[in-house]
Image 1: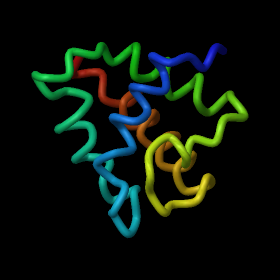
Image 2: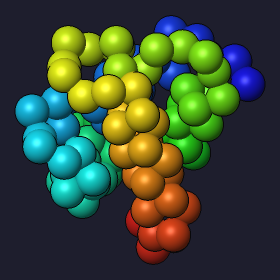
Image 3: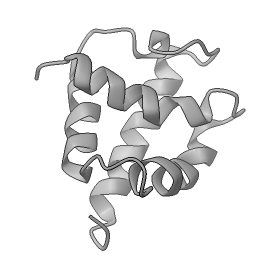
Image 4: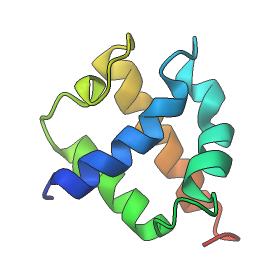
Length: 93
């Protein structure tokens, strides 16, 4: 998969709200509500999932997309869990 600037921009939007969270997994519902399905975002779920897939498949340092203190493993775990939630929640688009 291609990890391009659009995917990087989407991943930044997903990581930003959890940058100061002690456990980013605790912020998944907030990210889904305030970023993925927020009226101001207008990024289709399929684009969000594609960006997560591209990021996880890449060797890019996802933890470096924005200034924050979480490890690469934590950020990748967060994105993976977020993707699973998005895939499971088919009631929203």
